[in-house]
Image (cartoon, rainbow over all chains, first blue to last red; front, side, top):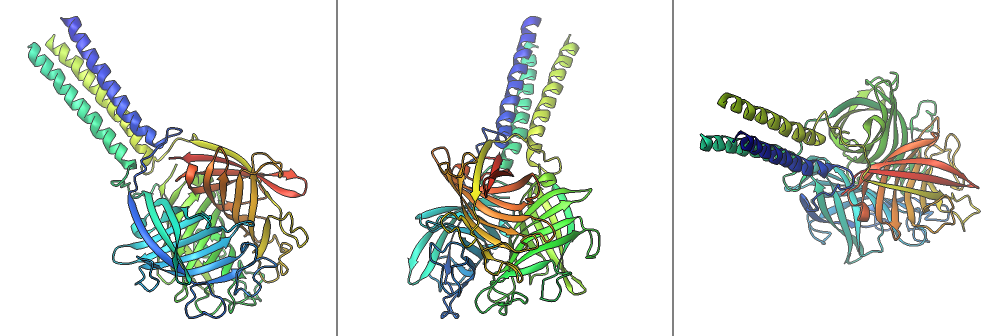
Length: 196
Length: 196
Length: 196
């Protein structure tokens, strides 16, 4: 019986050590190397719109953005975008952020930063800007940085950081254009995959 | 006694499997979805100052930054900031970083990059710059990217990456202005929440 | 014998609880505070080249980048870089990305964004750009943001986000210059340490 008894304990030992390895390993690999697959369920979502009205020399009252730099041969007056896909034009913006596509809706914050046309044979921009939100629902900033190939119906842009309610967050923003009489309205659907 | 003995082993089994589940589970959830709450204790802290002296056409010897772009109606000479909250002005800087608020203290590195005034009805900037540190204590770069609403006493700015001693780091920098005779001195308190 | 038996079980208990703690702790600390050491093995690697030909007023057919802004006293014509380490010059680029150092190789994508010379006493740039890849092997964007001290033989630049095949990725890019007849060829070795 002693033999059997030892075997019984050994079985327990094997089972428990195996269990220990199994569960801890599956946990550890969630942060490691080539099998580094994390869950694709967002930890937070946000669906917002911002509205851009570029200064053209005649719309000072309504304009929310301005050309501030352009290449030689480009927008010398800084009141019209350059020919050739606007390549090299740098635009600074302070755009209202709203909950729907109506530019006159109550803003919940501002989209502030710059976009740079950076393609020579199509329309594409580099985005470096932040949502600065100050509503009853959300207070804090969200940093966007990356390429936005604006000819595509929807574009994915990295969200690389945040503050306040978005402390340390990361995610992906899917942008698309809404046709709204005369001004550029961009829908931004943010899916955060790292929250705190 | 055999029955008792089995029960004893069973108790061990239950306790140990429970312990295995408890500890591994608490570890695993630290990286997942909607209960994605991570510890708010910084893994590294840094408290530094940088000093900005904007070129005004007469201070070439001391200046550390220059206006390089501005909107129409803005700083045509690039020796003074634009009216209307400096909206659209782009400033490139190469500022000394020190351990205290004295601009003449031995630099431990440089703050290099650009800031862009991007608000039309207040003072606010987009920051895209790096601390390039080269001291006995720290060697490496830290990337900052985000909104800095400079009218607030303290502002939080995302730290989105790093190299060297700050390899892959992320965190939040809290900035505030120190009044030091005639130049802009910014205190930067960095709290890293992801280290490697 | 009962005493011995209990001791045997107790030994098992100690060993297994110790094992449980040991393995789960090492897993848990990979995501926490001051002992936050993660594995340094990349989860993905990428070795690419991009090619930059700056517009000089005479090479419109070949040029891939343009000076769009510069400080007072700098590149007034925007066809030549400023004196004094090009400080303040802003260059927008749309550079081909290839698998080798031959600028005429079939591009696998574009490097698009801007670089800004931001040092007053050496050559150094701020990089804010993306690889926009569209090959059979890789489809997606990679965001780079940080300091690149270009006088160093190799430089490390933070990779702060991505989309598509590089969804949510982070890592470090090591850049170096290749001497190729007349144009700037930059080798970019990316090591991703966070994949999804």
